[in-house]
Length: 86
Image (cartoon, rainbow, N blue to C red; front, side, top):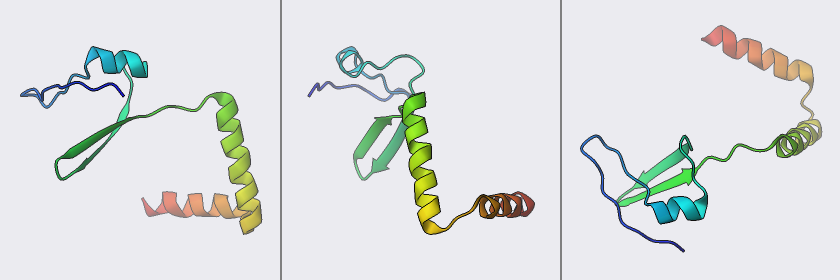
């Protein structure tokens, strides 16, 4: 584990120390989910799946939908309903 300290700027910015950025291979533009609870702040880098990982996720979702009895027509109907509700 790499540990370091940092400080919150007057603009609410936090610098992730270089050793941590290097160890985690963080690049400019990396997006994070930020979770705060009591005195704990967690930054979780958002990693976009590769195309092959995405294809596996879609296949898994389709299998689960089929097992649940969800049809394409059901999805289209719900999308229309949500769009109308806006």
